[in-house]
Image (cartoon, rainbow, N blue to C red; front, side, top):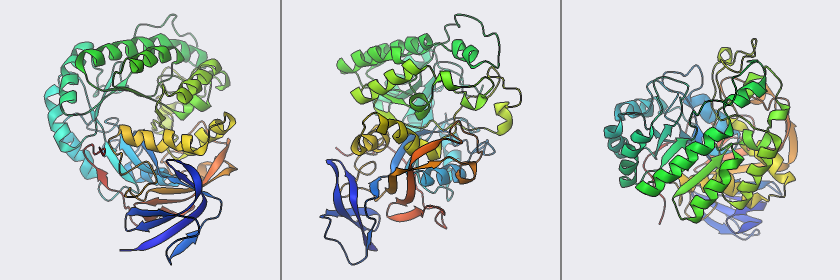
Length: 447
């Protein structure tokens, strides 16, 4: 079993940042020593930050079936280059969607020997698949996701309140959360006029859709006892609803995304369909209110919701927001985008890694192994310089299609190396020769 040490003046530990030496034995963090101590095989990284590998538990890898959009190999290479050591794959937009055990087994088979980081999987809740949910749980999914509005693909139809009432007690009985795309189509207050105008697209999915869906989900969680997770929150007017639910003690968790924290509607040009996502990026006031909710703890953590497609589906030539595929590609950029904004707001490194590593690991059922630098945890680590700014360039991105609203931006934080369970999977320019990632099945939070 290989043993080596990593020494840094800035190691991000649960109790704070301090100089320390990490002792890695095989795949695990065996010890955390004083800065001056360490094994014979020791690498000193100076004042660069050693943090826990990021956990991004909301990623669309699209394989099998739509690997021309993205795939396990390209997505996990991008993750490793961004300091992400654990992903959890969404049940769409693959073909078949992950709503049956057979579909899950097909996805699991497609992932083998392709993943450069560890990968878990969400199942799906759609109308009439409640009998499939126990089988998905037995197969090892970490939870199940439902849409309350059209998902964008017909093979993953939205669940009604009646569908959720059937599914949620089953999920509760198996210890799994319901993840919910929280929008209810209440009709837009005014019809879209110019499809190239971002303002028209924004008006077509008002925040009232989110707020109504979240009220319903809170009610159903209260009635069924099922844990509910709100994915990609974008509406600041839903924050008081969620705050009250948490104060009531309901098992409600909330995530948001870099694009809601780092971008704003006022800066999106007409026709710039690479900014389209659902729910939409909202205005400056909304963005600042989401940051406040994140600092307060109403929002638990941040994920990318990496949702790529082929360039043709973005309709860049037409600039048609109404018809273009919605989704932001940013898997490799979560650490730098969030840090660039968070540092301006006074966030420190421990808080940053709680948002990006510790809390998503806890939600995904991986606490005790992922998301922290602690004895006995997997040696999932990122070596990172938070003080260097660099420009986002397409040729340095590893996800399949180099389309992102962050291209050309100067972002702080450069990933220099990523270790997965003690093995280097990215050294700043190149990946490991072999894909070393494993499938993470079943929730295993330590007591």
